[in-house]
Length: 248
Image (tube, rainbow, N blue to C red; front, side, top):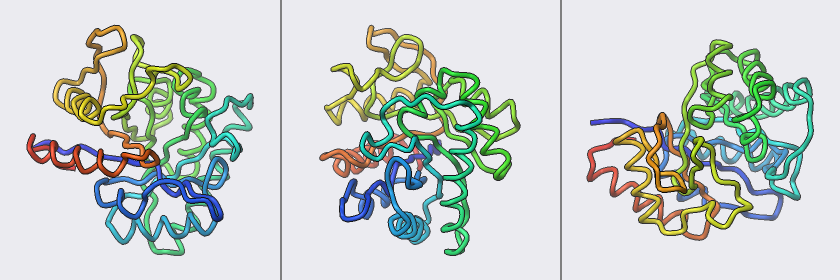
């Protein structure tokens, strides 16, 4: 029986605004990436989401992003590597405080949105992120896009890395994600998304937007928890993984 990590971005509500289905999705994942207050989240939400993860035995990760609440961290920002380093240390440290006071353990760090996408291609930004994570705690695992500059930088500084793939995103020929600005960026049919996940896990390949099968490393699969059909998809994926004798 193969074991795969299923992760989900969580704690992305803010104040009175509710985003995602954290209370239900948490039952179908093994790792939670918790927003740290810059692209989403706030102290109350961070505290509650840490406790939710602990209650369900789910690994806790920090999910730092650009300081962009209006754009949900999905807009590009021009920051120096030094500023990026400071951004990561600040946000990971904030979540680490809530993890400690709730007697939990921080497991990993996964950058969010536009910062994540830039780090997949930009060596200097990737190195800044990896260095920040290592200096906060060298035992943390760094989640990054499979075969990216970020996973490469993490390995270089001495971190354990997790090559991440996405259930509901399409892939370009170079292994990067199709930008959300393009019409075919998302797999809207849950059956197609489940089939893509199984292909990636079982064959270490993914079919790009040109219809070509390209190699990909798979340590962890991201399920987005903020879509209208997120819970139904998580349940469907869980059922198929069980049939295929894949544990999560």
